Amino acid sequence: MSANRLPLRLLLIAALAIGAALAVGLVVGALNTMLEFHARVMAMPLWLRLPLIVAAACAVGGLGLLFWRLARPARRRLPPLREPPQRAEVDARVEALRQREVDTAALEAELHELDRRRADGEVYVAVFGEISTGKSSLIGALAPDQAPATDPRGGTTRRVATYRGRLASGRSLVLADVPGTGEVDGAAREALARDEALRAHVVAVVAASDLTARQDSELRWLAGFGKPLLLVLNKIDQFDAAERHALIGALERRYAGLVAALVPVSAGGLERFERRLADGRIEKIERERLPAVEPLAAALDRYAAHGAAALEPAREAAVLTRVEERRAALERDAAAREADAIVVRYTRRAVVGAMARSRPAATWSSRARSAPR
Image 1 (tube, helix red, strand yellow):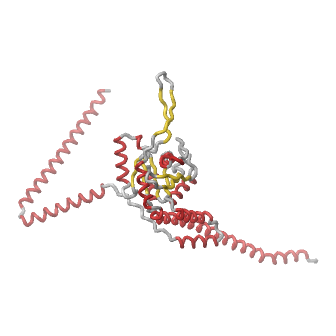
Image 2: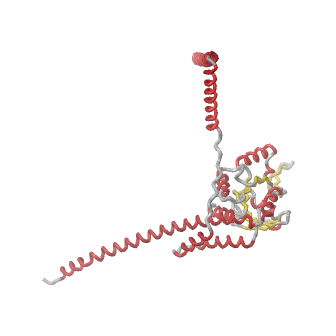
């Protein structure tokens, strides 16, 4: 077998030698051409040499600029802010839809909730994010007197619940614990979470690591409403110093100008792990991790200091935009039903008319058959 491999190795060595010789020849030929070109340029008179040098420099610069434009990573543009509808227009359109006997109870309830929150003057904060990112534990750290029940299993929050938190400055705010997104068969709960995020004055988007494509899309969707948006990096204590520095730097570069602040925190919560004892037995340990949420509390305090009235225009615009989207969907459904009803009505009339026109002939025929001969 070694005798059979020998010619193959010789062919491979010969091919490599030929390739190396060709590469050296190309390099030598290119250098020779460049030297000849340089010699010819230097032999030209100065008045002809300078324009040629300037033209060559412009060509090289243009090629470099083209390469840089093609090679650089594309910048993600910020989503354009939506032009919000006016309240009077939304009320009129909802009333017109109700006159067409369309069920507008959900839209009217949303508008009523908008007015109620404006009247109570509270600052509402929606804690939004995927399941298992520690949203409930985060709320528990901000509102320890009304801490929601936490569970290490993901997806245990099934409805929107509100808790009153009090900051170190003495200012209060209302924290909304919403169902987590990204849960299998959780489309209805995700809709609840998104609606509550639009009702809030401030949205805290909670993540426990780098954002997935789905989380990135949700963050940009929320940013499109122009409300204060905080990216909360939870469970930061689970990363070492190098990982923490790299992750925070990457998120800050990616979402600069999109979020108001990137806030690394550790919400604490229940921690469960197993420990092997000296005698070989496995001991299950359950303990509470101490929370460290001061950066988030400070960021929320800055918004609470302005008061709900200063944050109300963006919140109202987000809610009205959502109400208008749902109203337009109901209007399309109503138009489709009305069109179907018109088709059914005209079809029925056509069938009845055809039957009426054919009835006299049928009656005459039956009379002719029954007449005595």
